[in-house]
Length: 406
Ligand SMILES: [Zn+2]
Image 1 (cartoon, protein in one colour):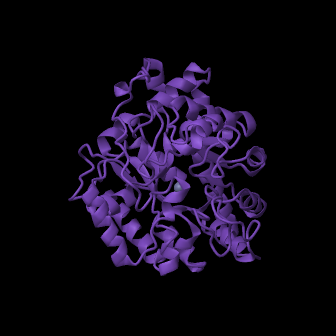
Image 2 (cartoon, helix red, strand yellow; image 1 turned 60 degrees about the vertical axis):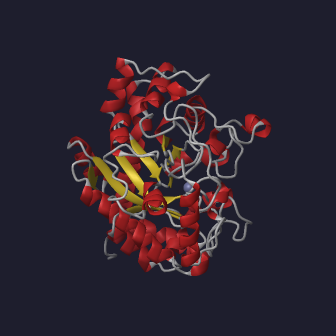
Image 3 (cartoon, rainbow, N blue to C red; image 1 turned 135 degrees about the horizontal axis):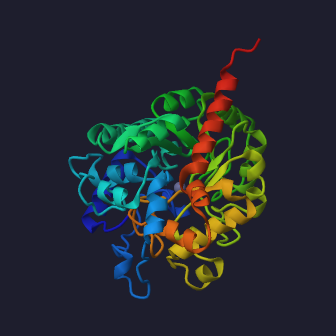
């Protein structure tokens, strides 16, 4: 969250008090929109403004490769930012105009975004107050409103084929992702209901454990998945909702890989070998991705991408776009070129790397990968080809599981 004024913090504070929410837990993991943190300095709007970090020049070749690909981002928290900063109203903040957020339509177009899982995150603390499901439905309403309001820019999609069609039509293919199993309030039937409203993945936990799965940033309780957690994964496979294991503990990652009939995703996680944060993916999990067929969508969150040694010296280091590309390359090295993607977490965090300040900056990733020797086919897999393949595979698993048994 950038540029928040003191008075706005106060007004969000009173809103949270009205809602009776426990404040503070949500922001601790460093991603997922914090609810009440001190305002941070506004990151520079452009890398060109940053001393010591010259702008990355995009060549004609990189431009062509980037814009002919299907850039598909796994996680963007604009819906929560709209709730927290704009009273959930596109009258209040019109994203067709430049905004002070990380995301708006002009910069999405400059960045060449073709498809997005919009996060319908609600804080783990809503589990305490018992309104997670209602709040998640409200976040879905915000995305619905956005799709209705800007039909020339966004297209609601539900399948990989529909995503491809929307891209061909020049629209940003739009689906939703739930961030945290608390959103279903321990009711399996809600998975289908959320799917019917456009949700295509659910992260099993956010920064706190749920009753049936452990978070990476909480005390381990289940050592993987409880029995009901395995039922949740089974129901998601049946419905055709991707199982997202960003935010979960390594034991829960392994248990999910043991359980899921469909490929899994990490919607926004990076490599633990480079940045030793519990939110990141350890190598022993990366090594299981080829067999599972899933994809690790590398995130840009500063605290998860800056190298371990640098963060020890400088805990607030922002890291750079080159660090993010190191994470992408590490996933390629350990899991393979077919198992990596992009999951920025724009508008969900306060600190982003130099060179990736907002959604207009994605083409620089293509430039760096090209400079590092990756070819067009490989870059297209990273940008979106892999996640589209995973969607297709999960759709097939769902069709098979929905076949009546003879
Ligand atoms: Zn998150």
